[in-house]
Image 1: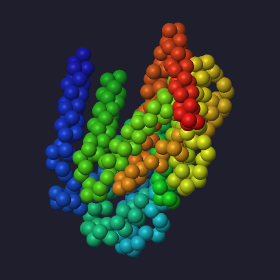
Image 2 (image 1 turned 90 degrees about the vertical axis):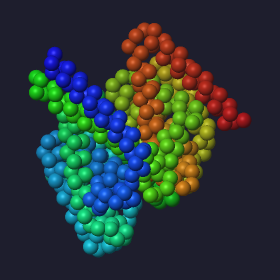
Image 3 (image 1 turned 30 degrees about the horizontal axis):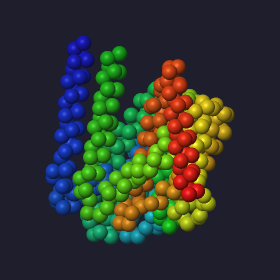
Image 4 (image 1 turned 180 degrees about the vertical axis):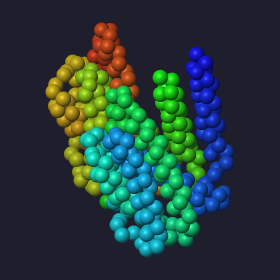
Length: 204
Length: 204
């Protein structure tokens, strides 16, 4: 009983914190570029605010979560590492090797695989994570170089990716109820659909 | 037992907090680029603004609920993906004849399926939904107002469509009770009648 009361009070606390957090961005009008919190926080905010990077990270995390702990662990380090490596390379080369349209392909592949929920080996999941990380990271690095920002932003991007992948993949992995896995697959289909529409927009 | 219960509750709270905080970034309009949040809201409201689209989406959910697993989730997964194909064709400028007639027929046919509580093989049900989804995507997926983010428009559009399916599935829960079954069949008849009205308008 005490445990229930304790959990209920903590839930209320978390709920209050969430509500407070919801209203904070409205009042501070806080884009990190204008508030001057620095490149590290710019990097973190970029991941959380840019849907073209956020969605593939979430989709990759869901895919890793559906494929079990080994795939999740490899994705956690593989995606983050490849993203940082790609970002550094993009920053140094200052030009994208692949067109931005390729990001739509990552939406399609990750969303499609998540929706299909086919069991993949951890090595395959790692390979996909590395490819996605290199592609998106390279584009991020190029963007940072073109905007003449500090490369420290990549550290912010990397840390945000690490935390997101850890939370989302662990959450998906902990799902043992059938309908929750189905919800993840539905979310994957949405990512694939968004990717297809994005591909259309970019080819238009 | 408690040791397992508490972390799982925390996982839900953390994910809920994360999702709400991520969503809260949109109304802050905090990015220097213009039209980002507006694109999302336009995409989100677009499927809801047309009764033909709304009724067909909800009918898909109702039919899925009548058919039961796996159709209950397979149909709502099929629809957004095929709708995106329709949008993709539209964005590439590939014409689709009789789009408005196709949308009206989708309401008629899906309504009739719900009204008759039809239970065809899963592949046939999926094919019917997939076929009509292309028309909906072609008509609605490409209507992005100038200056708004195509990415966020697509996200909002797909999410709204998925939520309409979810509403249909949620309403379809009443299928468990005899009176609910009758109510569902009546609602299917209403959708079919509305579809006849749309068809009349399309030819008028």
